[in-house]
Image 1 (tube, rainbow, N blue to C red):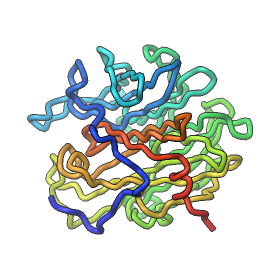
Image 2: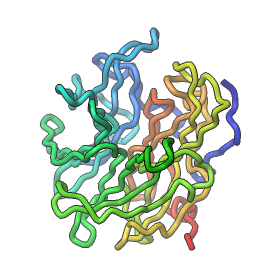
Image 3: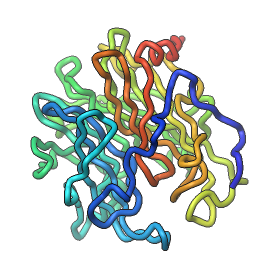
Length: 330
C-alpha cells in the first residue's frame, strides 16, 4: 500500500463526521461483514437507510453472499438496524441485488438497485411503503446499473440517471459515462441522452457513474457522482492480490427543466480517499462511493457514502458552498 499518485484531495467545504463510520458490521444483529453503499432518505418523519450487506467473515476475509439491510434514525447520524434483512433477491437466474438508492415520490419509496445475473448486470426499480414488501416495477437489459431516480417528474415524465457499460463499444475496457433516460410509467424507458463523459472529469481516467439521487435547488439539480482512476502499477490495496482503482466522489449541477444538460461542474474531487478507514482498512481501500444525499431545512447537506467497500460514512457541507463549487460549463 502507500499513497496513490496523483495525490487527490477533498474539497475544503466538506466535513467528515468526526465519529465515522456511522455503520459497520458491528451494528448489524445478523450475519454481516461489509456494510456499505447505502441509500438514505427521509420518510414519514424518520431517516431511513437501506444498506448493502456482503456477509461472511471479516477475520477470514471471506464472503458468502449479499442482502440489503434496513436502519432508522432520528438525526441521520445514530442508527438502529432492524433485526433481519429487508431485501434478498435470488432465483435460478438472479445471483444477488445490491447498491440500493432511495427516492421518495407520491408518498412511496422507490428503490433503484443493481442485479447480478447469470447473463449480465441489470438495473432494477422497486417500490415500497413499509420496507417489508417490495414490488419490482422494471429491470433493464444488461449491462446497466448505478441508476438513480429524480424525486419528481420533469416535463410530466419520470427521469433517471444511469451508467450503462458498453465494454465492446469502448474498445474492450472500462470507459463508462453517465446517461439519462425518461419514462411515462417507470416501466418503459427511452429518450436516452449522454449527460457527462468520463473525459469531462479531469481526475477520472477509467469510468464515472451516478451517486446519490439528485436534490433540487433554485439553481439546478445538485448531483453527486463517482469517478474512478486506475493505475496498473498499484498493488495490494485490501483483501485481493491487487486493487488498482481509486474511487472519488464528484459533484455537478444539472438544468432544472432539462437535466441532461450539465450547467455546473466541480473539476476536482468533492471527496477523495484520505482517512485511515478510506485508505488503509477494508476490503477494497481507496474507495468512496456516495449513495445518499439529504438537504436539511437549514441548508446543511448530508452526504452518505461507502468507504473501502466496508463501512458506511457521513460527510456534510452547506448547500450554498456546494453550488459555488459547480462552476459554469461552457
